[in-house]
Length: 347
Image (cartoon, rainbow, N blue to C red; front, side, top):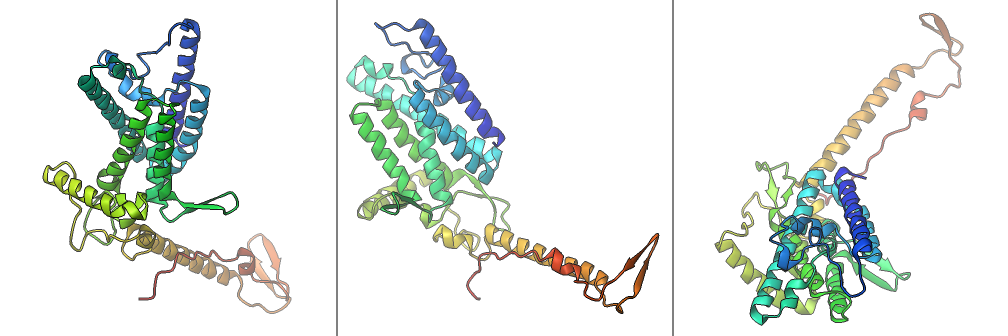
C-alpha cells in the first residue's frame, strides 16, 4: 500500500477499536456513551477542537468500519498512485475537515433557529464525506468508464455513482437508519470535493505552454451538470453558473484562464489524446524512447550477427567460438520492444 493510505487505514482501525474498548468498559443500557474527544459532538467541540479531524476516521460499529476500511484500501491505493502522496494527502485533508466544519455550522444554525437542544447532541463521525469524495475523484479520472452489474442488466457510467450514493444516504436518513449529520456530510462532501478538484487542485502542466503549473479541471466532462440527469441539467447549469460568477467576483473561486494557454473545454477522454496535453506529450516521449531503445538493440545485435563463412572460427581472448551455418541471429531471441500509444487523428 502507498504510505498515506497505509497511515489513514491504521488510524481508522486504531481509533475505532479504541472507541470499542472504551464503550465496552463504560457502556450502560440506560445511556448512550459518546467519546467526545474522538467523535465530533457540537456542544463540546470547542473543548476538543482536534475532533474536527479525528472524527472522520472513527466509526461506531463493525459494519461501517468494514465499509470504510474497504473503501480507503482500494480507493486510496488507486488515487494516491495517480496523484502522488502529497496531493492525495491534501485531498484527504480538504475532504475531511471542510465537510465537518460545515456540518457543525448547519447543526448550530438549526439549534439557533429552533431552540431544540437535540441538534447539538448529534454526533458527527464516519467516512461518508470521504466516500463521496472518492466517487467524485473517480468521476474526474475515469469519466467514460462504464460499470456493468448483473451480467449487463445495469450499465452505469462512473459520474452517475455520486448522485446514487447521495440518494442512498438520503433514504437511509429518512428511514431513519442514519442521522441528519450523515445527510449533511454527504452533501457538503460532494460539493467540497468537486469544488477542490474543479478549481484548486494542482494539475500537471501542459508541456507545450509556458505555464509552470495548472490548477483545477476545466473540462466539460467534469462540469457539475454532468453528475445530474439530462432533465435537470438546464436548471443546475443556470444555478451553478450564477453562483460561480458571484464567487469569482468575491475572489473566492479563481476564474478559469482564457486564451491560447487555457485548457480546451472538451470531454476529458478526448482531452487525454489531444496534442499538447501533458498526457499526450508523455506518451509521445515514451514512444520515442522505446524506439531509440529498439534501434540500439538492433545496432548491438547486428555487430554480433555479421555473416561468416561456414565452419570458420572467431577469435576471442581465452576461448574459441565455433559458428554454425544454421546459427540464428541473436535478434530473434531478443525480440522487439513494442509500444503502441493511443493514436491521434491524422493531422
